[in-house]
Length: 506
Image 1 (tube, helix red, strand yellow):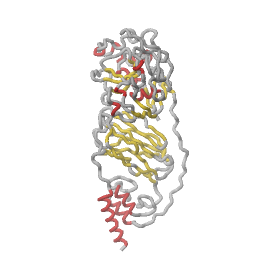
Image 2 (cartoon, helix red, strand yellow; image 1 turned 90 degrees about the vertical axis):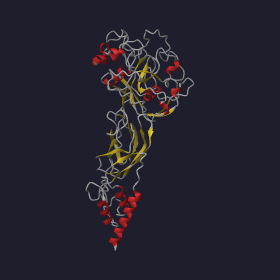
Image 3 (spheres, helix red, strand yellow; image 1 turned 45 degrees about the horizontal axis):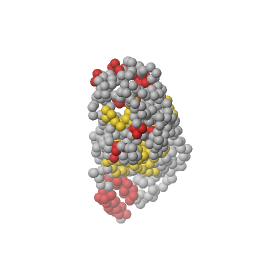
């Protein structure tokens, strides 16, 4: 009689679960899930790696995913981009705070072709063997135009290993319907906790095994664990010197700021004002100088003046590449002036040579504000020639730059973030970008900026952002929120230079 009741109960539960207990797939939404859904905890000191997988994805070109974890059980170690986004995707340094790690990546070559795959992997070190939840928060999927896509999430669980019979799937000390539920929901997976017979796959045989032991009590006490002290990762240095170009860089801390302006002098493309979060990064304290750029062209002959293709020697502004130089040397007395007449492609090439990159527009504005909110300029709301090099009457020939660092630095220790020369940014021009930009680490038109051949790519439609104003501009152009753009491949300009940034690595 007892056997009959167990069997009937098993089939009643199985029918109920198969009909109603397994969630239906929402075909209109992508699903981001922790895989495996349940991970048996290794012993203290060992590592545990989980994957963030996507299914039912369409037109996905970027992701931003937060993973909350129990710091009394796990310590974050590292994270890596997966194989879902196209090769070459920009993977930002993971942002780690108390009990949360955020991973972010953006494709520079369009949306992913497949519907499923691994977005990223995250590795933890076990601090204490205990049951804990891996909860997905603030999950954003975006398409190639930086528009958010519909998404739902599935959390994961770290479970204790050992301590009881295998058929007590949820380790609560009792073999009951809850164990059947766990196994039924794991059908077709390789969930180790639900794989009762250990054949590597959860199937009906595992359900049968649990049903045969319904009502049993499982004994055993898990062994005590020793919790080592939590090691806090060292804070990044506030100043670094990069080895290739020998330049000093300042740390720009991670955080939110208000991007844009409602000032009466602001332009339409500076609106709406919106909140943006930017990961920590390093930025050159000074603009790249003639001396810095000379080192680059001497180390990279393909970028020397005599080697530049003829298509770049007759530019629409009638200025040859670095025409103010004598051969591949800068004018006498101008070693520490910002290099100009350098196109966006050349600036990107220099950045790569130095192990850096150009700043995104959001990074540039956050850095220019110097940690101060609501100001027009890096130093305040008024301006004079004591603050910056601007407002000079340009005769169309002379280059009126001044030695870098001639004025007071801003709150982050950056010089000449207003005036002297405009500075190239990484973003392609999009006057309406502020209406649809993602809230974290925005980058405009990632497909356009994915130049494969920097030396020969002459695309007349490619316009990129530059920021900061120059020696020949009026005061409104020097505001921290002012946006401007120029053709990045059909001309060079005697009033545009650049500086570089570098990601902060854990």
